[in-house]
Structures are given as structure tokens and as C-alpha cells.
Length: 289
Ligand SMILES: [Zn+2]
Image (cartoon, rainbow, N blue to C red; front, side):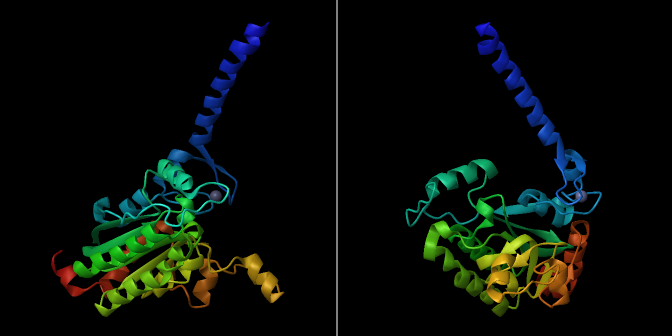
């Protein structure tokens, strides 16, 4: 009977494995209302649950296509830096983590930059990608955000940033922390040039990204129920030795307390950006509509 065990069983297992994989991709379970959603429908709905409006993570490409006029934009190369500047290793080598993240996402690092028109106004947009090492900010991300700000200055355009990040990339040590002042300086240059910066907080925006450029927007927009905070709620509760209020560090709570200006459903986000830009976009950019 060994042929049955050695030949047939692995084949059945392999078949069952593929079948359940297909099943996995076809349907997605909403973590909020726990309903099963047909993945294709979810993608067509910009990754928003049609039952409870839970906002899933959106890929940078889908994000860019959803906000630019007619979904048309031009990609701008991100800054490439030398990998693994401090030869870091934890349970895995940093170079191996980078390799994995690149294979998984098809990107070189955790940010994408693009230029296009939103409501006829030229805008440079950068989108952080949480799928790439938790959207963490190392040299490549920091320098690319600075590049996006420079491109906006060169083109006399507004800068819009979509943040999604666990914070600084610890595998780059002090070099990742240095991206906090570097990105702040880049946004300051943009403001000195009289150009607006709009930050859109997506789930989650935390750590060094929140504590640097993300909170320097002239306008702060947030997707519903996004986690926005510097330190984790548990750490704060332990330090303060008191229970935090419900909804602490979420978009709606932060709107009530003044950090966020607008909380908007993803389906209305492009319209909101068009409307905000109609007030704050530089005039030159609107002239060449
Ligand atoms: Zn749901």
C-alpha cells in the first residue's frame, strides 16, 4: 500500500492545497463585521467593506489611480540608497528582509511617488506602503519624501502624502531617526516656497512618521477609524496608570481633539482633495489646466 501513501496522498494533498489557496484568494473575511466578501467586489469597491465600511489596506497603485483625474498619473522614481548601511541582523539579516519585501511587493522600498492632476490642479503625491516592512521609514523612504517635496517645489505644485507606517526602520538605526528632521526640513522648504502640504492619514500612522512630517500638513485628512498615534495605547496606559478613553488614537477622536481636520470615507476622498485643492493649490498650477 506504500504507493498509496507515497504517490496518491501527496497528490491529493497538493490538490487540496491549491484548492484552498484559490478559495482563500476568492473570498476575504472582513475583520470588523466578519462577513465574507467576494475579493473582486472588495477590490472594485476600493477595498472598503460594503457591509460595514471597514477600510482595508489599499495598494499604492490603486490609491494613485483612485485620486488622480481619470486615474492618470506619471510615476516618479524613488531614491535608491545602499542597502543595509549598518549591517544589521536580528532573527534575520536585514538584507534578507529587504529581499523578501521586494519580492512580495514588487517595489524597491516602502513609498511610491507620482505626479498628475487632481481637479485640474497639478499635485505631487507620495504613498507609503504598509505591506513593505510595515511602511517603516529608513533612508530610502526619508530621501524619497524629500524628493517628492523638491519635485512639488520645482513644478510649483501641491504636495499630498498618504501615510501608513509603523514608524522608523529600526534596522537602519540612527540613520532612520535622522529621516525625521530630514523630512521636516523638506516640508519646511515646501512651505517657504508658499506651497501647500496635505497629509492623509491611513491606517496605521504611528511612531517616527507621525512625530515628523505627517503632522506638518496644512490640512490633515484621515480615513475612518485609522489608528494615528506615536506610542502604542498599552504603553501609554502603563505609563499613565490610567485607562484611555474609547476611540483613543482613532481618526474620529483626533478630529474632535483638533489634530485631524476632515475624516472622509475613501469613496469621497478624491472629491475632498479636489475641493481642498481648489482653495489651497497655487494659482500657476490651476492656470495650465
Ligand atoms: Zn465589514
